[in-house]
Length: 243
Image: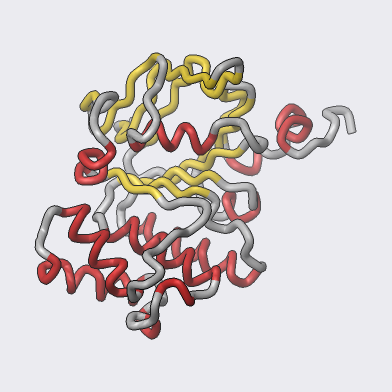
């Protein structure tokens, strides 16, 4: 069995009367691409916060490469190898694309800026941003902002990458380009957890899907099988189970 690189053990979290997680167990295997789906407000992004350290669970533990990181700071987790993108890209708008990457790479590695230039140049090529290296990030299209958001996460040299709805707002051919990029990242050896509402994009790139609803994981398995389950159709897509 492939060892787990990131594990949530009995994680619970609530905000007032709203239960986000109720004893959730979740494991990401090394080299795996895992998708998480669920209705709006199900707590998917909160789980990312628990993984990265910006949200403290009420109970349970988080493990990374076998080490308990439940009380480890977000900065330390980043330098250990956990990176994430955000649903709404927020680059440093007054900086160039290249400068955005340099800041992320230097912070993520603790190295001097000049020592990360080569890494950043390679990421510009990988993420199809080389021709925009000297443009101010605030003037990029949505697709390029999403590419930059992904590149900034990769600049920290993660072993686990958390993607939060990177396909949202894109048209079909743009979504296909992002899926191709995610596949390239996965092929480089990075383990991935991807939250996404654009389901066809998700199932094109992941090995396994879990469904979050009401603070629990209600389904898990191969992507095509999970999305066909009546319970998932009823809860996630609003289709009655006997339809």
